[in-house]
Image (cartoon, rainbow, N blue to C red):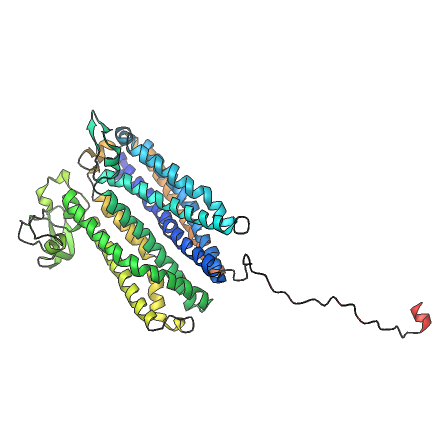
Length: 481
């Protein structure tokens, strides 16, 4: 329990907690924003009421995730000034500007048009409402752009130099377009979209298994399946490109990702360990299953094995990542989930081509529907695993190759950091329970299929306004009086 007296370790744990928890919510809003643009566009084009009802139903999840994302994102950014003040002072010239762009360009745009998207259906012109939905989606994805730009710059700092402990920017465009930036933004963009698609598909599959509104949810499942046909393989390819970049720019991270301890010279492909038990103290793997030469061929996909693969022993212990086992298995979890998504997409597409996903017989595909239900949370796990590889693998540097993590932390009493860490843990646990409750409530209630459709007249039973035929009162005169 020595870490409880180390403020730097506690600050890292706190930032890890807030980052891991926060990323759960914008992952869904960024991807689901695009889905809402699709279904509303289909509504405007076809005037099929189902698409209008889909837009209403899924927007409930959007606003729930948006609210929690805002509540958890602000404290995470405040930590740069509280727990990481030396880092903020050193890189604020660029890093602070990019974080400011995310708030002013992305969050403000998303928040400004969210109200119109949610409540403006019958209050504004349909074109204006659709434009609002598009701008909400654009704002959500601009957040991905700027956050990943800032983090990519931390991975491959460019556009300036450290002068007397402060990073002086010489070229903002070079800093923004740092070597990691494009692939990182694309990888995260497709990760959020893929996660959202399989969440929507998983919830739709659950309704189909329950035989609730089968025809309605078969539509949403087919929409996400059509999108996944393009997204799932693209994500795998972009992930491979990102791995190649790690090989060139962060060789220590790559060595940790693959638990590669020994040096493999050029012309001799390195073995790839499918599974292993890394032992950092002994600087070896205690047990492993390897595929001979595979790592070399994976890394040199477009080349001729002309470069060596460096092992962790090539660097001093203080210059390499510490938690090799965590990085190694987080990387494999991310890859495994990516290929599972691709496989599920392929099987579902084959069943679709065979006519097995029609509204009449989709409920009979129970094994396939359970596969989608199982896939619903996996995207979150893959995203979190990817960020663990990205950030833990960058250690011991906070700004790769320039500023060490130990030099970037504020000098705070460990007891103070422990109190804030405990408070965050308690509050975030309650928020997570609340999110699960309200999400399950939305799912249990289901879509309101009786919602009035704009522009569609509701047919009511005709009311006969013809005066009734006069019937003389045949009672005695005395009774009439």
